[in-house]
Length: 119
Image (cartoon, rainbow, N blue to C red; front, top):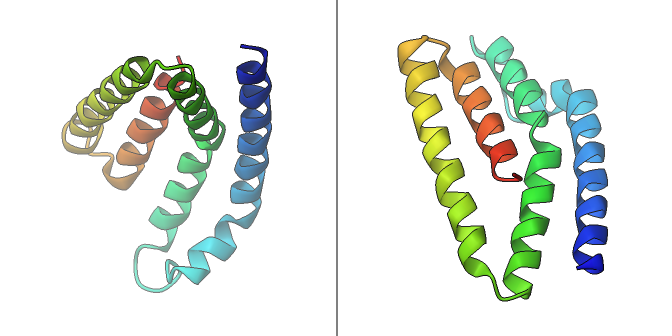
């Protein structure tokens, strides 16, 4: 159990570092992926910034899932993934289709789902 806590702390720190790197490097990433060409530059940059907010959650949920599987509890990991994906789908429909938020809505839905997966 102590090792799982240490891994979770380390994963959170790595995720925070990734968040900072993504926020700082968003224009570089946008350019490298060709997002500054055509009419999608602002949208691409907005999505990168929104999705960066889930970097700590993604690292933490991956660490938690690995720790659970290592302790012989793959079921809890699977349950969290199914619930998170269900939320992602529901929010995608609500935010992209219903609220007409487009790519930003999809990014927000994914961020929310990834944070839920940590709970």
